[in-house]
Image (cartoon, rainbow, N blue to C red; front, side, top):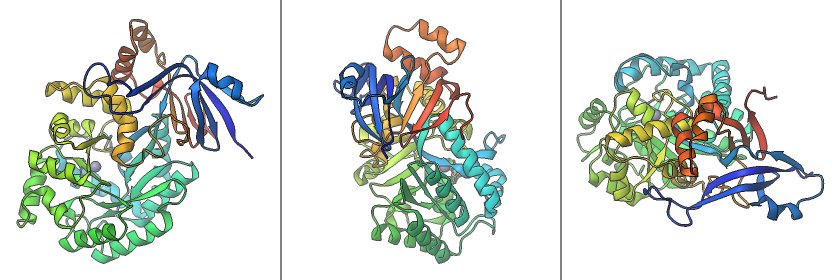
Length: 440
Ligand code: GUN
Ligand code: ZN
């Protein structure tokens, strides 16, 4: 049976990088004041002005009226730890102490299936509530934490990337892998989940300090044999971490070179943070086609540093945007954009609303090589859509009344928006979140 309906209202989608100027590059933005998305069996069958599409629509088709809202492609989060949901907002400390005091003890709990199931569901409820329909997700080193996450995402019809953390040293016993046992678990998980429905597997060595050379080498072997897999890890986030990596890997010319030596730096590799990098390292990452996940709320919360986005652009290096929960303080793409703007202000490189919303949608889709599926509202794309309510709160309504352009409205949303501004979220052609309404 055909599952079909129309969403009618203003819609915004990017066709290309709008650039860094206040005015977007010609042809980069598509905005329809009275648009229509015809959804059919999980995809966008047609996208046009409502007036143009109306004559083609079958009689009696359901039309959802979003004329006082704003539709965009579902937001994408390129780096997040679902297992750290409950340790968000844990006071104090920088990265290495924070890992030992809060993160590792919490991750130990994921040996228990019931805990993993509860948090996977809570995490997905929260991401959909903030309009995020795709994320690249760290689980823990327990295979159960991956099975439960993928199974919850599959049940909801979501496009998600995730992987089992590989770590075989420098952590509590309950978290460390047997070096090759962790690789065998990874192979089993790839077999069970990669390519199932909308799911994809991401190889996930935590970061250089928690893997032996043998484990990094075996991970590189997996990637060589299956280059369609993604890979995610952390890189150059914190000065203490960087000094530790230099001690552990004296043979490497810099932190990035550890990953290069084991064949982990490729076009589908995401490196979280990359704050303290030489321009040479940025150039090497760019050459490989990799991306850096800029995680502004996390970088501020853990006191890690200010990410130089424009130095990356100069190197031609892809930058994606991410929440990095639980180092991050906000799952919402709005929260990430607001912090990215604030970091940019301190470096004299403000983030325009065009560039911000591009990164949250098509930019992140491109960085993750998912743009053939998601990231834009166009014919044939998967129907993942966020419906924003620019007047969700009295304050937003007041602020919107004072705006004179779409650019100003987007900027106000980026700074004042939160989960309340997400009226509804659609994934795979289905409404998966509606504000103030319990979902079945
Ligand atoms: N580096 C290694 N593990 C982690 C983690 O869980 N969070 C952050 N922010 N950095 C890391
Ligand atoms: Zn992280």
